[in-house]
Amino acid sequence: MPEISVLVLHGPNLNLLGLREPEIYGSTTIEQINQALYSDAKKLQVGLDCLQSNHEGILVDAIHNARQTHQGIVINAGAYTHTSVAIRDAIAAVQIPTVEAHLSNIYTREEFRHHSYLAAVVVGQISGFGADSYRLGLQAVVNYLNR
Ligand code: CA2
Image (cartoon, rainbow, N blue to C red; front, side, top):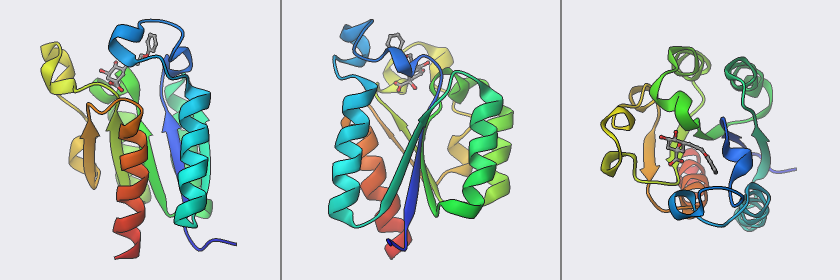
């Protein structure tokens, strides 16, 4: 059994990836992203679980529950990035090293996307590399945990 297990959280509307607005978010589906992550996790010899939810409280519960099961988190909180003090507080409370990932470069988009409530409580942020942002995030959190 791997010593390290990582939780990947996808926030609201990300279940629609690949099905709507491919010009912004690409044509890769969430299932394809998760498959690539499971394959990477196997090579990195870490455990992996992926969860998508459109509900803030479910994401908060998942972060709390990770205390017993996961040593690292990669989160794309979607629009909650820009609104959720609750998700920020949950990440700060559990003290599990967390990487924030975004498909798009949030700093080249509308002004309201330039502020992340999560940025101050995560280890780091990866933004703008499409589906690769998650893969880079997984690699980054594993490197962080192994160092
Ligand atoms: O770039 C990202 O990953 C975002 O977290 C995506 C969020 C957006 O609110 C953030 O500002 C940046 C939106 C996710 C919506 O996903 C969709 C996917 C397909 C079709 C429609 C929405």
